Length: 135
Image 1 (spheres, rainbow, N blue to C red):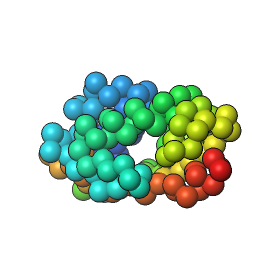
Image 2 (cartoon, helix red, strand yellow):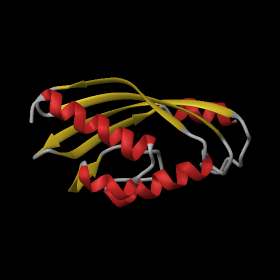
Image 3 (tube, rainbow, N blue to C red):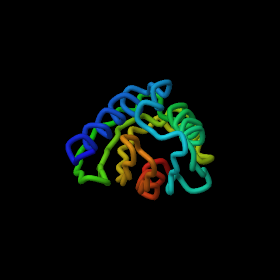
Image 4 (cartoon, rainbow, N blue to C red):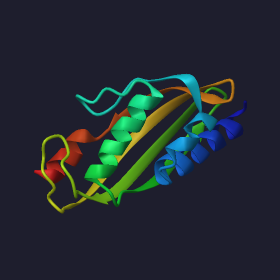
């Protein structure tokens, strides 16, 4: 696949799974042997199922989360995306009870595309910035 197709694959994945929260469609975008190489500290998420579990926990803590795709760039093998999200801390997160505070979080994800699917991802999340807003 070319850069345009890779960018559109990741954009649609982000729209459907992350913005829309429709994990039932994750297989349309992600390879069955997908590997994630970054997540929240203490919450390893290397497989699709791990990712679904972490996302479900996150949505319990931040049920009104609204994601946005800030930047996206691609080539024939890689897609880089910068995302941001705003939410209300309405449930326990990393041992911090709900504060009711509005939070802003950001991160970057580098996706390797193989055979028309997302094969691997490296995620960088500003966890320290998020936790500072909660305490």
